[in-house]
Structures are given as structure tokens and as C-alpha cells.
Image (cartoon, rainbow, N blue to C red):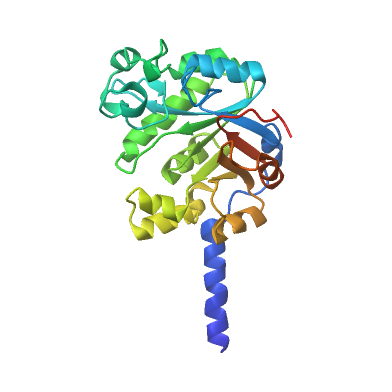
Length: 278
């Protein structure tokens, strides 16, 4: 019986070690807490202005919202602000963003508008430090370690002289780990989707479970967990109890925004206009 209890205790300690977020650093969280963040800028369901456009970002700044946005490489290693891995949905061009150079991407209208995907540098100039940013570094399982090194360094280099509050997040714990090593003073977050959603995207059972249950936190030690609208699993609840800053993505008009603001330290929203702070 004692051996069984010992094994259970060791297993519990091991799970805690795997899933525990970073502790402390509460001063870093303050500037980002109790705020609503416009997802991909402030845009409508009609894509006017289109998401991730300079117009959408300028509208969010003018309204006083924080912002969550996405950055990735083009083929010529320019940092572009664009959410999807592929260009299909927003430009009508078939293919991956990473396979086109920026000149080609720049010639593709966003959702049939006069806007195009902006450079990260132009985005930063538009915001000009006036509101907190949650910057998502886009990644894919197929990306090599060297590619991710270059991507993370490029983002950090672009932010080196930026005078404004920002934190960095990713779905890829390899990215969050790199931010931990390269920029330990930057608040970092792990984006987490549900097991069901991961499986729906074709992810294998073991990897989907590991990703949806924060089993790579030992590597990245994120300061915050950004969770989806589905019911929190045991690992997300554990991270909450262990003191992680909790962020919700993405709140939509049909969700109970008041309840979400009670549950989460920050809320990333889309297609409605909540209070800027709560």
C-alpha cells in the first residue's frame, strides 16, 4: 500500500512539474490585466475594415482597446501581420504566406478592399506604444528549430526600440521556450486549444492531448495561459490554481462577456465592442 501511495505521489509531483506555469512576475502582468483586446484589430463581420489591416489596428487604438495580432515570415523573411497560415481566405490567392515574398503579398487585397497585409514595422508605427499588445508568433509543426530561431529573433529585434507595452504568445511551446531564453524579461503566454479542436485539425491523439493539457509548460514556463471558449480541462484549471494569468480567446457576440470578464484576467474579443477595461 505504501508503494502505491508513493507512486501516486510521484506521479502527482511529475504532473505538477510538467504543467506548472511561471510563478511571480506579477508586476509584469499589471499593464495587461483587466483589459479587453481587439482580435486582429477592430473589424466587423463584413471585413470592413478587414482584419489585420492598418485601418483595423488604427480603429482599435482610437477606441482605446488593447490588441492581439499575428506575425509571421514571408518567403523573403519580412515580418508580416497576417493571421492565417494560408492566403486563401483573406486574399483569394492559394498558397502559404511563407512561400510568397512580401512584394507579392502586398499586391494581394485583403477581402477585396484597398488594404493589404502590413509589415510588422508599419503596424508598430501605427500603434506607436499607445495600447498594450499581445503578439502571437505564428508557427507550424513543420518549422525547423533554425527557422524558429530566426523568426523569434526577428520579432524581438523589431521590438527592440519599440516604446510601448507588449507580451508574446504562441500555440507552439517551442516558440514560447525561445522567448523564455531570448527575452526572459518579456511576459510570455501559451495559447491552448481544446483536445476536440486539436483532433479536428488532424493532430494525433497523444500530441493533441499534450498540447491541450499544457504538458509542455515545463519547457516554456508561460506567465499566462490563453484558453479557448470551451470548458476548461483539468490542466487549465490546475494552471489557474497555480497562479497563471488567465486570458480568454476569442470572445464573440454570443458569449457572456460579463461572465468572461469575471473569470479571466484579460479577454480577446471579436465582432462586438466591450468596455476597454474592467
